[in-house]
Image (cartoon, rainbow, N blue to C red; front, top):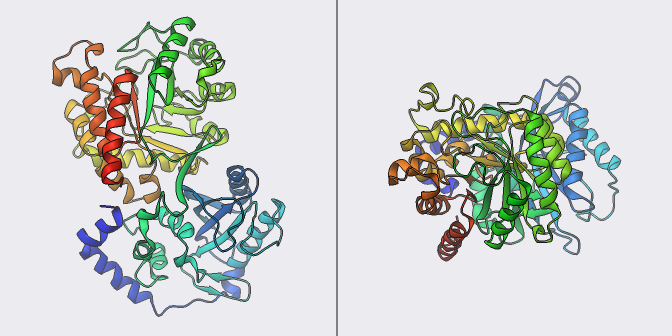
Length: 507
């Protein structure tokens, strides 16, 4: 059941309260006037973005940069959507998204600012609804309805356009967090969630020219179609499962070739052990282990079409690896172990995997970091806070991949609760941000200690059958990427799970 149907069916009391508040606002109508225009206090706004000319995502990035310089503080980003053009259909596909922010610009000042950005980025009048490098529209401005000769907010056709409503709803939480959001709901007859449902809601995603995507290696990845397998390549002498096996360039390359033959989608290179009580090595030592192998992998003809992820919590390592040709940053610390990580990732414009962990590898399993009253809720809340901090540093939510951190500051029962509670984790995140809750979800149970405790397998390499079972549970529970040592067996498990999900219709 999707989150909107859940809201309507199981939270009817809250819905009735929301509806009563909406009704109380229904008599209000604000026109733009001099007091709003000239001396406006800081207002929360939602701005839609669209592009179908040139490098579409680069156009988005440039528009975001220009908005920030012009007095718009961006606080949230919707997901990224590739959509078929509306009205004038003989043109390239669009990318659409939206941002939520705050500004002291009055509504007409804001409109003028956005039009100036469009012009500077090459937009001309052209055909109405025709191709454009960038399209910036004010969807909401504070609590106000605005009707003037040049500006109508909200636009009268918002609620009939899925390519506008999908990113708009992303910027909300299933919980209504303040009066401004409540006012936004009042702009449609029965609230924004019901308006989205009437259009088709989540059932539209992946159909009728509306795909939710993430840009990686210059390709748009629709992670809802099938589960991706991430293969682990440890370039360390002390990793818990296979430390020392692949710490030479030759052995690492041989392992990469094997993983490719077994059907890997992403290869995750790690040159620093993050096992419990691991000793931290320096940036220089990590780079010395990593870069020679990365360079050789990139020379392999068979690497074409595969993605390379870098498992690091150092921003300098992330920067150097992406410069060399890697595609994704996988940070087990979620930005907590290097204060520069979010700023570096923001400028790299690559996907960022943010994982939940308390403390660091040397402290994550101490008693304080293992205390949970409700592990799924607390992991969701803490993971969301990392995403929010990253967003405020300029990392859009449309580049995020989430990992609840199996085995990191978790007890055996916590790991089991997470594996069985992935939908719950998404739902808890969705209370604050529906867009973040829809990000790709990565699960990494491979050969972890909790499998050994349950199955009686002291040796990590004996835990592959348990890993296959955990991966199966994760995929059927909603994981989009699984991180494993044994690619072949787990790739088969993923294929079977995907086939079952296709039979019943993915949610």
